[in-house]
Length: 227
Image 1 (cartoon, one colour):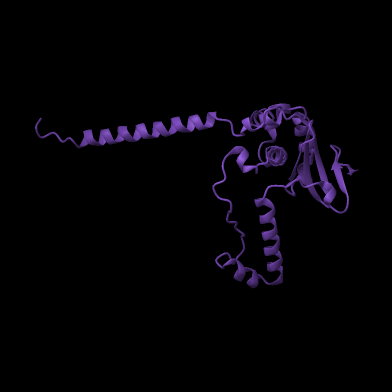
Image 2: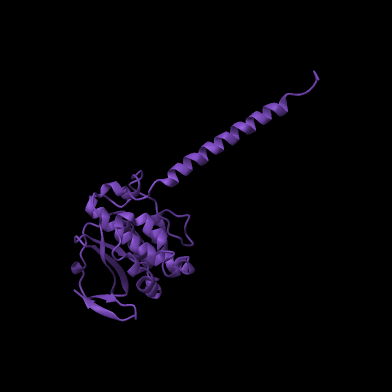
């Protein structure tokens, strides 16, 4: 018995400690998951959604949400909305009308059950749903005078790096644009403009500021002029 090695016991103790650490991490994650994502305490009274519109402007789609108290939020849809707008209008919009926007976490869960929307899972449902979610967050952000990020968390990095995929990805941005020629410069300019647009919070943009005509998209695919 005197020659029995104690190494297995030491290894067993280490395994036990590692298991305890993993369990502690899971318990911490469980506590985090039980917390609401949206900071509902920022809003003292219900924010009832009165209207939810999908607007088309020169081939681009905008989502506009309004509360019963007159608050308004906007979001810009992905170009694929030109194909997916029937899901927005027929499967999602009606569910949000009359809901309290403060309960956004719960709404985003229940909308999958509404009209069996889970059958459209993936981009077909996720893209229109995200468009609505961004518009609601924009509305709530304006009401609370906070950027969207501070409605759900804290801002740790005010600037982010963006990636533009081409065959010259190893070059610095300026050299890359020069190598791409005139068309490359145009892409870089669009890239920078899009970055600025997506990196800042909407500041009460009004559709009336756009030149041209804004049209509401209807479930049958027709579009009505909106003022």
